[in-house]
Amino acid sequence: MEENVIFDLIKNFEKQFDYKPKIENSKNLKSYKKIFVAGMGGSHLAADLIKSIYPKINLTIHSNYGLPLGVDKDSLLIVSSFSGNTEEVIDALNCAIKKKIPTITISSGGKIIDLSKKNSLPFIQLPDNSLPPRLAMGYSLVAFLKILNKKINIEIDNSKIEKEGKKIAEKVYNTIPLIYSSEKNKAIANIWKINFNENAKNPSFINVFPELNHNEMVGFLKNNNQFSFIFIEDENDHPRIKLRMNIFKKIYNKFNIETIKSEEKDIWNKTIYLVLLSIWTSYYLALKNNVEPGKVEVIENFKKELSL
Image (cartoon, rainbow, N blue to C red; front, side):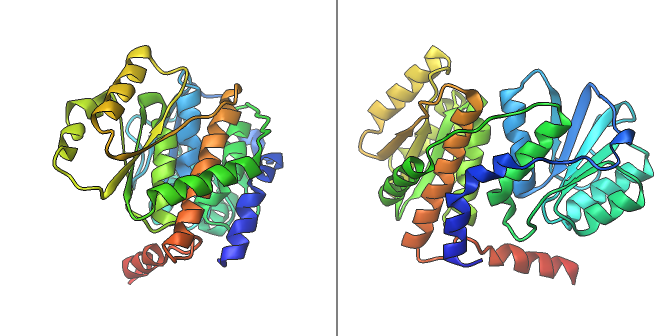
């Protein structure tokens, strides 16, 4: 996908939240207390965010072959694959069909939709299957929320976020960004990592407070400046988490530490602000790295090797 196409896609990212998903074969869908999600890569990111924002929902995310542990005929399995051809997810779907597990699928097409129609499963067919899954997260999120009977209203200043992302990209250029957050914001931190990896073709890793204070922070005492830190701060974090972040910054003040937070009050606007900021940052870092943000050739080549 060409650079200008990716730029336009990110520039219009918030329009994805205007999407009105329709559940086909909905007569076969009812309410369940336990929900499982089978999805890989960008296809489970929306579920990760939902799990962090609605902790009372009994939601388990499975990123592997087969069925998740604990899934049964009294639970709902949501099978998510943007392309519809993800090997691990197709395997999970086939297992669910064989064991007659209540299942609904989310996909833009491919084998997932074919199997859903063939087996009369409820499904949501997403628009525009040409997008990279990580950049179609808005569509996926709205679809997941439709299944869970929840709604969101996103109102953000995309131009402001773009400018902030461009500045962060300048500061973390030629480093390995480490994204640190509280446990409850781990899903957002992981999206930052994924966008650095796939868009900017840049190594990046995550960890959370307070766990990283018990091990990882020791590894930088004699390190050079190949790392930069991105702290995702949240006014709702535990006071001791905030203190740990401040002490860490004090100890490692010679490193490049970028602090990001959203001033949005609504939880979903705050979350999407931070997600979109990660996309813009990785986009401009891709330009500085002289790589195409839309392409993930190494993953596609890996898939071809698997099919041989």
